[in-house]
Length: 613
Image (cartoon, rainbow, N blue to C red; front, side, top):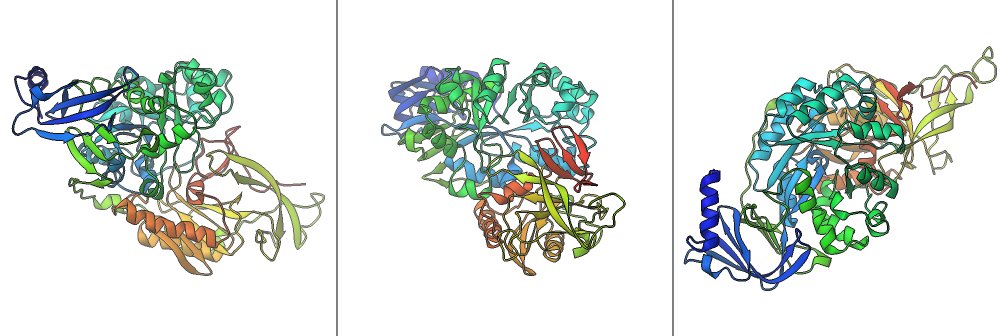
């Protein structure tokens, strides 16, 4: 690696023409996000992966061996940065994620690997950090802060302690503390959260936020007072305004399932807040979205459609992001001394980079990667994470009740109706509804007629969480509404934020058992079973979260899962991602965990079936 002294001398000498550049890009329109200008007829001289000169004529930096790229009047755009995301949500490894997004113009990602941390703890984070270090683009890691996300309400496969956080703050590649999801632990000044935040602050690192609560009163102020510096959980314009006024960066996310840009962009467009306090990010992007629609290029096109000027939207995914993480000396703009992360783009309103340059190297041309990516060998322990204890049977998914109907002394009738606390899915949003619905009971078990089927039932399905880290054999059974299943089926997923046990839903206990056992057999993933047969499957052998295959292959397999949902009668746009969040006990209103049904508004465990009537 070039030393700072050597690099500084070389940059100065190339800028002065005393030494030649490795590469010169000629005659482009400089998108100067730092000054808010479009500057035509611009050349860029690059040496040792960094920009030495940006100006009207770089001919003085050119020698016989200098590589010349003729921009031909195309826009010269800084590489795009994703300020908050989880690689695991793409169902691929860091390397395969980079292979997919770099060709679309993403040259920097800020990843929070709290998914793998919930399975393997600190060694899982280190696995991701080590892989990140070898990538051709910039991959910064935020140390997961909340494992478990809500202590006392779930049991993950591992735990992250304040000592773990303090240790990670010393690792190269760690840029900050990952999203602080245990917001009650913050506003109640809990010891664990206070210690982790202090460790990050003492190390001079950025502290990421996660505040999904709609309450912007005292508890919100208590959360901000802890030093939380950004948040991506806002969905309303008032959320964005409140965060920016309190000194946070509002991260507007546009992932596969969470479409929160349009709901907040009026904070800039109508309320005229300073756009430099806003960042665009993805949070969670499915492999199908990445391969078919894009990554930050997709976010940019959407942000422009939502009304943002192209330059403003670009600032929100380049210089704003770099500034937030204290990296403007290194990236986020096209300027001398920074890494040469440059995109050649024909049309900013229909953003598709023709050439992608990262760290001074052409890595993609016309949507295709032009370099070799690192090969990674994953340890055996990373592939051995689904431990059920014993094969599951249909009776494991029975929902029994001793609830009475009428007076407490009256016997339970052969068929009766009881009130159940049911998780209500909200399409394209992370929050859920806490529903109270009537369900039928037959011989002491909840009986569910099919929604929309011949039996004319309500839209209710079984939802179970199967412990898969310690092989306890425990199964927690609840109810969910919103999937609209009209066929008998069973669907299982080891992608189950954040504790990543196994989630199983469906209308047939037999199919649910087959689905769960299939995932144990293949080492994790997502599967759909209908009438006893597997009709959709994507295998995710690394931690039950990621595949080592290319994203295009993973996307094809994931498409079979989406097709399986549809075959079961589901019409949601991203049902697999909606399912994966039903165990996320830090987002209101109702979730399931290995400890039971969690009321996230009041942070208490409640029964599935209300006793008495």
